[in-house]
Length: 398
Image (cartoon, rainbow, N blue to C red):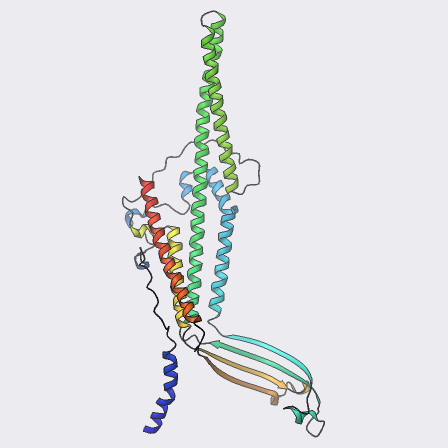
């Protein structure tokens, strides 16, 4: 019994040595620290700011049908939103593809082969037309099922699924970022147009008053009460106002053209009507904590790319270990089609396969370095996005 045990240990020793050699052969650089760790990010708002926090459709707080219509058209028709939507579709398909790799596969196959046996080859005995043989021509038929399953003992495929899901969530966050930027741009341009419209209305009133003054001045001049110099000055004032009106009208047309581009409008005009400028009261927190800052779509994009890159590192590490696959088949196989569906033509089998990487010219190590570098890059980009977000908020609040 002792001898058998020693032999078992010796038999397992090469496998143990091989598995030990599967680990990465060099150190991987540590990634930089993340400014806002994922464990510190909560999607639940504090009660103190929950009531005043802007909603997804924040522009509806202005209660302006024209603005609602413009933003709705922009979100539905803008090329940037269509690109973001297609990227999400692509990421969803890639995630489903990775998920499918976790399960088994089964194929149905059938083939027919007309073959003449060689009398000098391995199948030479079947090349004669003797008792028990009908050679040299045979019509071989095969029909049956084959199945396979990668057991994924080291979690490589599962890590790739997590990576694809992380990328999908990043694309969803990018769509939210695009939605935020697009709706904000439309709202800013719309209120710029309304501001110019209000200025135009004031200028029109000024011009009306100036025209009245010109009319009165002409009447007084004809009676000899005023001189021509006063009339000339009034005409100059009217000309200045006309120029200001022309400038404002040109600015309004330029803004409208930009709005038409954002909404992908095919009409000649948006037919905007002047509206009163809004008065919206917002209750935002006095201090902006990281738990609120991390809710920004641009930071969510960077965060999910970090999660995806971490899973890519896990998959790259798991690639150093052996793949174990199970394969099975159930088939009908016969040299003559007339015998294909007989019970005696049935064949079946189960195979367990192991693939162990031994020498790959450094491919696995390079792949791990790529994944690790991508993870470090994602963290660095996230940290930069945090700094940029803080600076942007500080400038806006100042």
